[in-house]
Image (cartoon, rainbow, N blue to C red; front, side):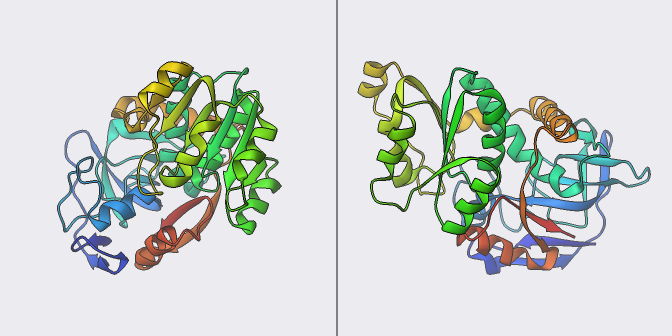
Length: 312
């Protein structure tokens, strides 16, 4: 079979397709014929050598944790989380208790995207206790997680405002029926305040960095902030004085790091919503396995929209 290996930490060019024997499942494991593998921003960061405090990987290794495909031997359609990697491949071994049967109404690509995007969004909604009274601000709304978050917010909160940049991406979000503020516009925070005069009760920050810092004053009294994203270079932070004075609360990356049993439960819930037509993962681009380096480069160059997949 083929698999994509990170031969050393570095730029996208360190990703190479190599031949390898089919993995052999052990007790409690299943061999999956991969039909779609989700490619994440965090996987590009780890490949560069960043984030090893959270992801203890040594090169060479095979990335990819969100996969959908066919169970070898039975042909059962399944989706699940591989653990630390192995998903960028024709076949991968997955713990049987991490797999969920794939409903007929949901395709392989959508299912692979849901492994991370739907589970992370649902976990944050649970921790932040989002309800029908909340006005929500989604920072970095054009990615897969951002688009899933918008859809969940529309069903569960009072209102939602999306932050994004790039006219083409903004137009696509608006076509889905969402209100978008362009973060490349001068004084964009004022445009948010016009929509949310009392501030955002909940902020889902998928970006961090300077953009997240600019949005901090938009959090309402008693508001909740999810500082789980750092494509902007760092996680957002709010000083303790402001948190105390305004009764605000921040949850960090740990809120999105899920134990296997909880992730599997949330995958099943996300699939059920997708099967009912309540949630539609947006797969913006797919790449063949041998173009994994191009997929990573596109994510780093911020030219992607929605989820990015490898299709062996």
